[in-house]
Length: 325
Image 1 (cartoon, rainbow, N blue to C red):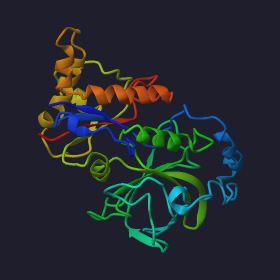
Image 2: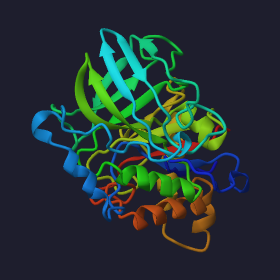
Image 3: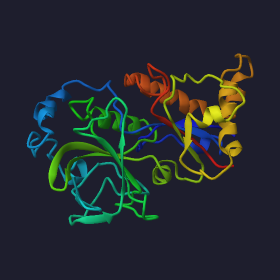
Image 4: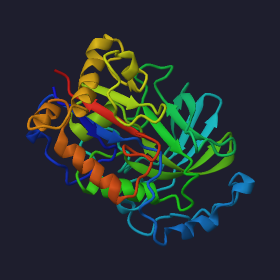
């Protein structure tokens, strides 16, 4: 049973998974954090923002406006909350098209209000938490089973507080996708709560079963979200499965026994920390897709991602996916 670390964004020139073991774990980067390597002259957009006034009236309507055909331009999405309703006024969003899953990229013919009711809203982020412009996660199926919005069960509203340009992550995700790694789709939007303007957000595709279907062509495996705790650096934590359960939260198969979910995780870190010898690679390859993993690390390094798998304070912001047996 090989495990792989999976990156979050999707691309057109995907590496063929058929060359990999049929039962493996991949590593994905977690959306809604910021990649700092792509900067250049993009910070000029920041002059439209003013954090002193909750962004009301301080972001011009033509920021990131369409200068090309709708298929090739970021769109503007306005979310509005009235009681238990979310109203979305939609235009064309991202330019990449997917074979399956939510239609975030092409919304041809969708120009009316689309509503969902009784959704779950959760504040998110650590260093980016803000009472003025909070980062949010919206779960459309929290209270109504199987409820979707544009094919999505969840959506991340990234406040982008650590990126004044607001386009570094989206540019980086497009780069990751272009290199054939799974990646979350993103679009920019203007958020309204009860008619009150809250600012421009990055709307990020959540990593869930819909995401797995779109990027990997399957969703029946084990998806684990790494939870930052005490600067974990991939050490072997011993035989006790609870040590791994506290750091990797199951996103699928939550009702399965811990032995089924976490024994392969424990064995992965056991083998990785085994003294290197002639059989080290073959042993680790039973639990980790090494080719994909090295590609993942190379991309993070190129993008100067200091808060990812090789984070400055320990492993952070990634998911692992293991194919079902």
